[in-house]
Length: 90
Image (cartoon, rainbow, N blue to C red; front, side, top):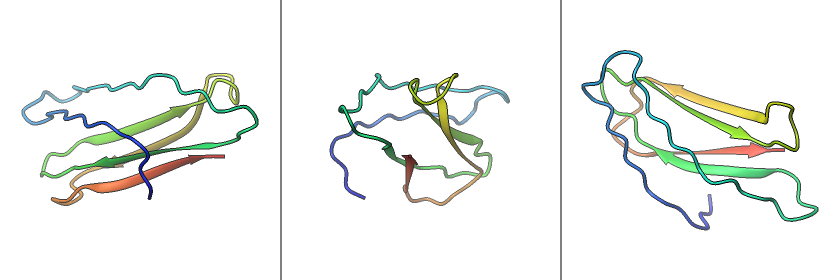
């Protein structure tokens, strides 16, 4: 996986009430003319006995009425190492 640029965000999730959630949103990205698809790449770290669910949603307002084109989620304890994930849009 090749990373062009990126940022780091830390969301603390321990000692939270059931049903609590955090939300991160990115700015809108515009695809170059004539380009189809795209890819969202990220790393995540989910370690602990009471780990909840990480959800990532990719929207494309040109491809779908509600904009949602891909949804990915992972639940529970993964490991004590960062994991990588790519969500390709076709």
